[in-house]
Image 1 (tube, rainbow, N blue to C red):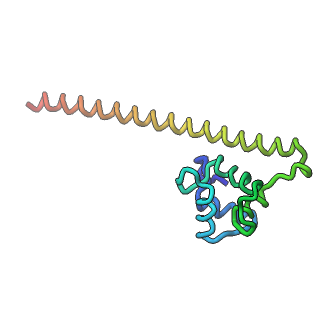
Image 2: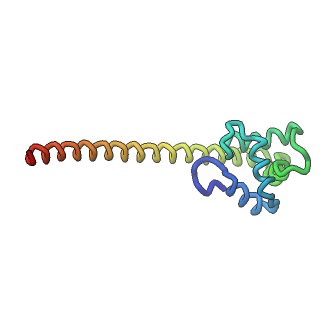
Image 3: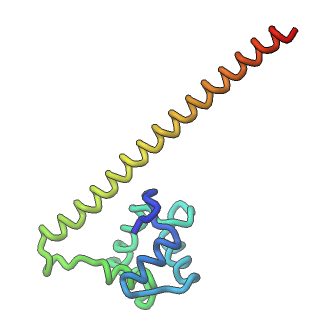
Length: 138
């Protein structure tokens, strides 16, 4: 559901996810869902914050009619039904997705650093050219 592939679920991605799961929410409901577990107040859900939904559901800390409870119920793993291996596969897939997101972030960072280096080189070349131009113009 992380359409932006930034490692977070933002408001629109949460909206689409809830619609696909068959539990659409209002705009205010979606904002409330995010606010309830948004530990760093960035307005989006990290993987850790997403897992917090299931922790709160298991601890009975969510209202039965809340959007987060609906999400938890729609996404929960029944170990009795799926078995330990099914639950293990589910969480390994989540960890793998998180790992891929981290690799993707590292690649983006490397690309950004390379662009910054290229921009700095370009500025140095332009400054050197201006100096030469000024020497010939004088």
